[in-house]
Length: 362
Image (cartoon, rainbow, N blue to C red):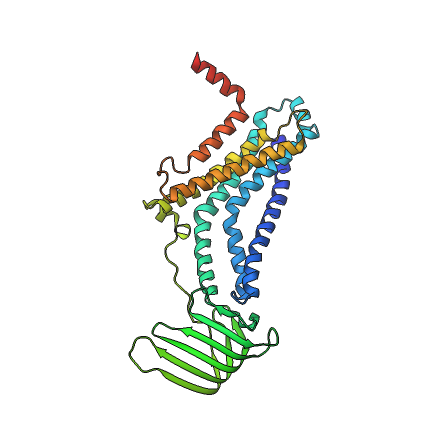
């Protein structure tokens, strides 16, 4: 029990550090795209933190197995290089002790990944779609520059600023087109100033000076209108967002279980495979951490990295094939975890597999 707790503690330290690094790297990569849209005025700054948090929450089902795999590999390589394993074997520690320690940690993490994949992930995707759809309908007027057309993702609004000295200043010769369900509004104003009051739910209103509003009816129910105003407050953003269609990644697990659609089957199998992959990757890192006297650390790490990315590529490819109906529900994506399980057995217990093979041949 003392050795088991010691091994789990030695595995947990690099696990926390590696997971933190992976989360930071993924968060930075995700933030770069969102910040680019925010700088260009296509995304409200208030939505960035929420979108990044949701993306990180979704990514944990992949980052946790990767961190576990790397932590087992590095921790056991260090213990072996510092002859701690030799000391443990001298007091009759068996290889099964290493497997049990990794199974204890991997089993707990696999349970967390299962909850993330089956429950948290679809809820996070639902919230992400709702926030991104809402954010896509809002334009950050304060970040816009003169000379460019700014079009919302849904195409409902187009804004053009003729002249503007700099960010946060009044704009001249402003053109705004707002498309409604039954009519189109075209607004031209001599000056435009963004009002201070701004919320993520509605965005910011604009005060227009010397404005001309042209209402063009598309339902042919009333004549077109022209309105002139010395001062007018308008909102270039609608009060509601677009409605996204059905998405398998945002569907509940029970709904996927009752569906025969290829995309739903692939998504369900992916969710069920992530905790299995977590457990198997932790076990596979045990034999991959071993090294012969002539084998360098770089070659060992290179081999382990190739194995991990090869397995991840197989899983994602199998998922895509199932989504497009290239392969059936069975084997679906299960052949990839089955290959990983076979590799784990072959590397953890090569002598037992060889003996069983010889007995069958005899």
